[in-house]
Image (cartoon, rainbow, N blue to C red; front, side):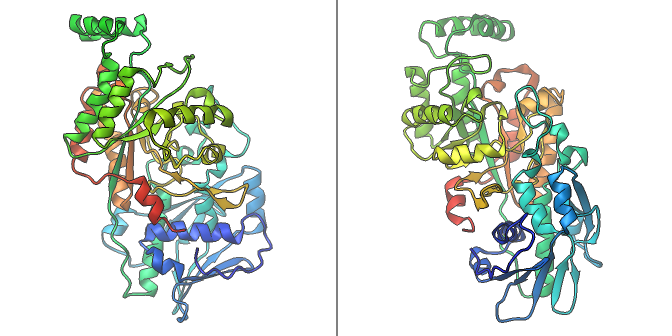
Length: 468
């Protein structure tokens, strides 16, 4: 934490600690080092948070707080999205990459410049710190509202889709605006270099175990006689095609110099769970091969673990034994997720979650591609786990988005470019059995070609280096 001087806050809607958290997240995205941030003096005053980046200098940055009616509107679900501009005379790549700023959950829609400047200060007139913490915490998903048939918050109900900024990492872009303000006040300061990284993940939903005639028939129709023979042999103990696809998916990534993660299930059969036994010797053999190849092994808790901590804990226990690791992360099945999930995963001792993404489209559900420790609004604290935001999922492309073959690449490339522009992490989910589906064409391989050689995101390193 910084050496914050916590002043009384009359509006208890957002604590001083929460605002310091938001400042920390904004600073990370501005390229501020952990060591420098820890020396900042932060004062939470009546209606304003004032930051002194150098305690022995007069230069300061003022963040105004929203008025009381702003919080009344938020509690009632009346949300505004603000648009801000760069200050005058800002030129170069930064303003071309980010032509303006979007401020979700803002205290007003028309903002003007994101920061204005005096001789020794910068001032942000909109309640930017509230916007950051509320967006990252997914405040809009905590209020009563529509849910889909899987009890998920629908993308169509999100501010990001309603205001058409789902394809922009708006919180990360606001970090660039803050970077400019710091450089204007302190011309000698240079931000830390940003390194774009990739987080290639695979949910292992279907492996051909147990034997299902319906799936075998479908694979025979698409893959021919030999595929049919292999599938039938799997019923007598051979490795099914879908299980072989797990190794194939990892091998294709490795051939491009890419690491990846495999998220496994330990769920009973059900309408939405295939119900394979992670202790099956054929599965154990594949897990051993992946482990030897340094593939990240993670968890993919089943459909009915959502909002069921007891069920979740039982599954995680089985997966820890099968995967041979106590320190695990992963993703909820069907992306059945809500802010409560962070607390459930934390209680089960999981290190990171990567469920915060859209199931119906690609884009930035939390406005960011930076992994971060979430702020738990109802408990006024930072969670003891990492959120690695999901940017794109294969099923969304061919399902709700209705794309086929090479057309799947265009939205993926747009997300990739957006992540690169802010130096974030491009997290892609490609189900292992999707490489067997003709509807995707060669999209997986072409994406791997685009990502070839990109450094792999390391969640352990991120947790150790996070601003604490």
